[in-house]
Image 1 (cartoon, helix red, strand yellow):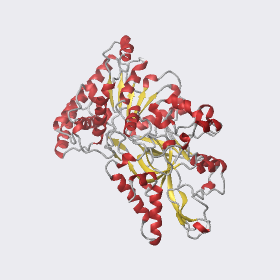
Image 2 (tube, rainbow, N blue to C red):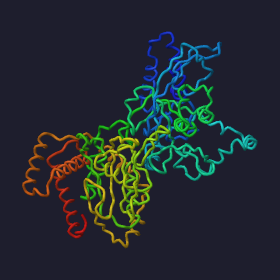
Image 3 (tube, rainbow, N blue to C red):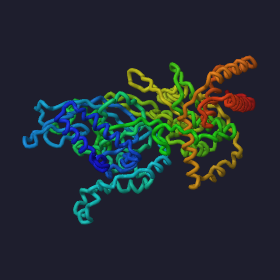
Image 4 (cartoon, rainbow, N blue to C red):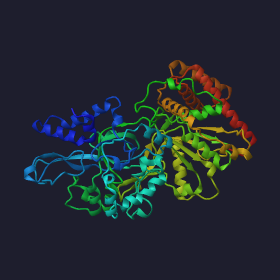
Length: 603
């Protein structure tokens, strides 16, 4: 049985040992045994924490061909590729069957005329860090990571004299040093793998195709060997695999050497643009050969990856004023528990906060608070420039054979903050109109229509949308809450400037973060008895006021009742919970009607 250091530092040695042992028994199923071996090792208590993370450790500190993990988002799926899973070498002295699985480059010359060569198929996913991960997430994950110290980059072993002699060789490294200082220690997990910028960037700079502007991180080509049909676009994964950063990959992309010993014989059929996108330099986009992976139900580092079954952290919370409750409900509504009936998403809860002060910093401050509570979020100021210039919808680039990302290609449970207070006079062009339409479809149907030039393809999503506006939003919403600021507008700037997040509040914030994530994952049901009570109650409401009570009101009250229940740690609706939800909804409608009577020109 290999030791922990063996299977983490040299996983290929474990694989090759099983491959060699299988030569005497061809039907031994060594491939499945190898995968099961690594799965069993990772199931041991806290063993997965010993595996260095590609998210948290700079790429040059990770040992090539070692086992690493990567928390990622499937941004694109490339076409399947062929590779040699078994091959013979040309050298007669070492002529033996070699294992080519989990590799990009062969160890020595390949005998292409050998009848023992085995060609297999694998899939490639283009994966990026989960879009919109907030700074507190990075800080917590770095505190938990246990980086491997068994590998030290060779350039750190160079003496001072060697550095002086080889100044020209190390010049590219020196050009990166100012970037390290600029980003600071909090961004060290991503700064080493982002695309170069400034004078060091070349004309052929690789576009890492991140969905959100300003994102940085280790984009990665994940090679999948089995069950790739079980993975879907836009899923969050934690991948455990063998890291490949062979310089030969970059050399092939630049020189296109036909005599290269790469294992993919079909790569020469790609166009130059497709070759550039599908085979970027390994120093920027490393390869990760998947051994095992798990789909993440959430991306909160404070909780285990598996859905927690204990709801004790949720009990006793969910209290506060009506406005605070509804905002809390919105934080919970990004739940994976909403269902679809045909094309209608049941249980979604897009909230419109109207009455936001025109003070420029108000909405930004509100978003900063939300950032402190959720793992992933994105602020979109709906200015005329953003609406006309940004690309919201992903589109297919047939020349490069890739999916060009858009701002709405987001992971499940991401909070999308739309700031309508940034609206200004002007005219939307064709791009702006498409973007507004895409936002409307996202809110109403929880779907994004990806652009494939000749047709559109619907991709369902689960995005938590919050719209901040001065009046009623131009976009659709499931619930509108009109704010009544308690601070005079003239003093609002001074008040907002006095708000600071103290370090001692971090422990309390962690409790809030765990509470919100756990409540989202709770199962929820309604008993037949309560269902009958709700039906009877709704019939009575319709009799009393048929004009103002509709099926949409019933749906909204049921959503509020569900969110109220899970906010209290309950997994089923009670009669008392239904009555409280009805009361909250009546208070909300009363406030909106009161505002309409004062501002009669508002719809």
